[in-house]
Image (cartoon, rainbow over the protein chains, first blue to last red):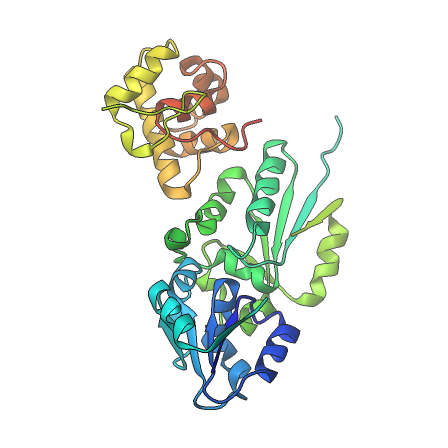
Length: 98
Length: 121
Length: 103
């Protein structure tokens, strides 16, 4: 199981496509920094191809900084810094996409 | 008296991911101090610089929104936003911290032609 | 309690500011604070609260005009009360950081 860390916004479509190709059952994605813009309800379509058992997270501090906490998709769970660390240690590997 | 050159600043980057937004703002305020007419255009991810309710305390950054809200105090009131970028992100101009003029992507070339200098961030 | 200043005499921590600190800084700059000074200190502190930065001269003049009227919203008026460079001096006495765009 792999944790995919995405730190670029949906405007980096080639990068996101590459990440989505690498997703497998049971993996998780966490959006951080500019990546949290992908958590917006308006961008839900981005993740339509991923399996149901792939969890989506977005980092709380980065959502708050950008003023978008209340605008994110229901598919996405909010993770604080501690939960981010737990995710990193629970998964077998982490991969950063940037 | 020599005419001051007009400047168009095109912003394309989101706030906080890197220093582009702050650098752009620095240039805009500096131009204003030299009384150069400044126009700002926000397109793509840069529209998020203008979004209300930013709280960057936890990532130890200064609030871009607060700096941008001060633009009218620097007599910078020509602020354009690419309408398509708002739509793509599910936003409207009411979600922004300043009054702006919405323009279509196809009008950007006109804006460029109207100014002496163009800077991009 | 020790209050820390940077090399140029600006307060390191905005929380350290109060009226007597302001009077102390003003004295070092050779300024005796009068009600006319205080109302300007209030304007610049309000500006900082709203916009999270210290204003350069131009926005400062504008802010003073909006708050105290166009008679006071003039460079000359500010220069009389805070001689030299009013935006910097006023920020210093008001306990704010040095204005970035003060050229």
